[in-house]
Image (cartoon, rainbow, N blue to C red; front, top):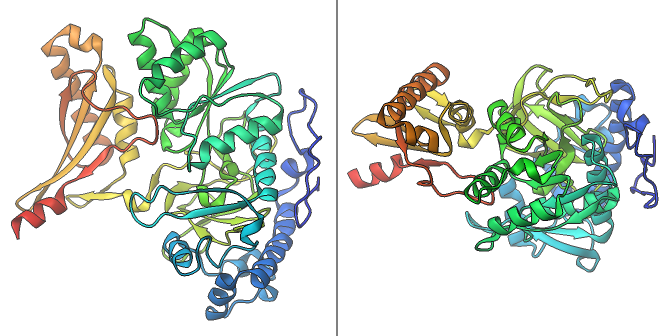
Length: 469
C-alpha cells in the first residue's frame, strides 16, 4: 500500500499526474476485504501506541477488560469502549492543557486549535508538527478525489480562528499544489468584499458552509451581480448538512453553475475530510485508510449492517498527537457498501450526515430532525433563502412553528402568492414530518444570515415550563 506506514511517512514532493483519477490508486481501489485486514493491523498498532503513551486509554481499556493484544478482528474492536466529548473535556480539566490522552509532549505541539467553549469548557486540540503535515496530505487526497487540481485557485470563505475547517482546507489546497486564497469571513462588510474579490480574481474553487455560499449569492444579487460570473467550477463544504440535501445542493449548483461536494466529520478527529465526496457524487465516502469509520447503533455501539442507520464512530489511523480511538460523534447517517462508481472501494454515506441524535426533537409523539424541515422548505417555490424553527408549548400541547422568508418575486406578486406559499409549506411539512406545523411567512431579509454554521432551531418549551412553576 502506498506509503501506509506506522508512524506515518509521506513523500512531500509526491503528486499524481493531473490526469490521474486517484491520489493513491492502490489504497483507494483495493478489495474491501484486503483493506479491512490492513486496517485491523493498523488498529492494533494505534492501540498499542495509545496504551504505551496515554494514561487515559490505558485506564479506560483496563476498566473495560480490553487490551490491544486481544483485538484479533474488527468484530473484537467493537468491544473497545467508545470515547465521548465530555470525557475529553474532563481529561483536559484534570490534566491541562491537552489531556492525558495526548501522546506527545507539549513541546512537540506546533498548532493549537479547539472548540469555542460557548456551551461549556473549551477543548484544546494540540496538533504536532508531524500531524499538521498528516492532515495536509490526507486532505489533499480527498480534495483530489473531488477533482481539484494544481491549476485551481481555492477561495476559502470561512473563519480563520480556532475553527479547524478553514485551516484544513488551506493546508490541503497547499499540499495539493493549488493556489490558496484564504479570504476568511466574519468581519463587518466582508461578504460584500468577498463578492468583489470573487468577481475580480475568479477563483475556480470555493470552500465554506452551504449557508454562507447562499448568503454570498444573496449579497451579490443585492449588488446586481450574478454569481455565475465568478467562474467557479467546484464548491465544497463542511460544517452543516446542507450540501447533501438535494434541494439545497441543487439550488447552489444552479446559482453558481458549478458542482457541489460535501465533506466533514469532527474537528476532534482531524483530518475531518475523512468523510468526503468524490467525483461520482454517490454521497460522502468513508476514506477508511485515513480514519476508520464505523456506523454504529447509538445504544450498543456495535456496527450496523450496510443499509442501516446509526451514529459514526471514528478511529484515527495516522495521527500521533491526540489520536482518537472509537470517538462517538452523535451524528446521524446511513451507510452503504462500496464500491463507488468512481472506482473507490470505500463504504459511503448516500445522504451524508443529515442530523444529530441530540438535535432530534419530539413534537406530539413524532420524532423530527431539523434537516428534514430544511429539505422541505428549501425546495419550496418562492422560498427566500432563510427560515427558523420554533418549538413552543401552550398548556400541555407542543406547537411547531416554522418562519419562512419569501422571495422578492413572491412579495411582488402580493398577498395571494404569500398565502399560497404558506399553504404549500404547511401541506408539505405535514406530509414529510407526520405532524402539523404552523408556517409564518416573513418578508425578505427579516431573518439573520450567518457566515458560519446556521443555527435555526429555538426550543422554548423549557422556558414555558419554568414560567409555570
